[in-house]
Image (cartoon, rainbow, N blue to C red; front, side, top):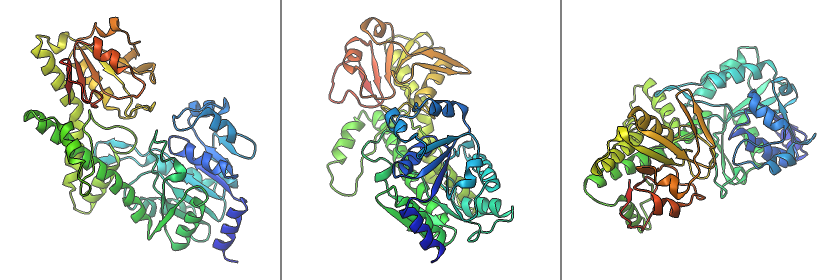
Length: 435
């Protein structure tokens, strides 16, 4: 029996141990899915705060409930680990660590490198390693493979290596991990087949591509598609405002076309772990080949401009009422990057607050998901909403459109509203200004 056939038999019998390195928004749901299927899962996490939550059997991300977590935190389910020694018993190691930017256009894969160095020191012979962290094309082959082989390990003998891009959409109940198809590319065909066999345990569809490079760039194409279209509609919104045209009505009208159009909507910017940075990984790598991706850079620049554009619009709105921005009181509604999600990563609302404070405006916020904001230059608590509180502010900015906010209360008691999310669609009241 070949190694691949034996591996598949062991998967069927659930005689494989899985390790997930990094238990964040990607890693924790993934680890839970494998545990639900009856596999012993080592969850490797070096963040002490996350480990403390896990020991208390408490969730720390919105896509995993405490009940769901408790159901798998059993001796034969998910075992949280604070070091990499557990990898000595793992047959499959899935890496889900952050890949931020050093500067706007420069990738930072230091977390991947550090994880791989630790993995290589604790690797069980014959293990399959799968990188899920979003990165530029060539990372798996040009960086990860040499790091593993420099310790004397050989691909195809001591280990197998794949790339399978994460596709988590926080807060999307329609598409949990199990319903999102997985793309897998291996350093070799056998590695790809092993990866495909592993993911077929937890997802409805696993698609194998010809190489790790194809798998890496697939993820970047997906998010480049989004950033370019968001940047386009943001630019259209600014253009439409100059022409005194309602961009929201335009989008609704264009959406009636049954082919050749997909609606995207303007907003105060984008946040999260993907769209603000992933396309810039591709932009950076393309430059290494002497190619400058003008679409990616332009879209990124347009989106980065949006928080400042929101403040400019608010400043003009106040000026029309004889109020200087530097003497104004501004209330921000929603500070997370996405509705109904407790996640502040690269939230445009935070950029708006920073710009307003630099302009000497007095800023407060309301967001039930975020009771306080504490950063080096920011220390605020979420205000309770009532008519007395709302009347104190010169302008209320709807930055994040949480579904549980009392927008009627805001509408009836705010002096003016700048709505960046079109929550007041169809409302003609005079105190509403839309992006």
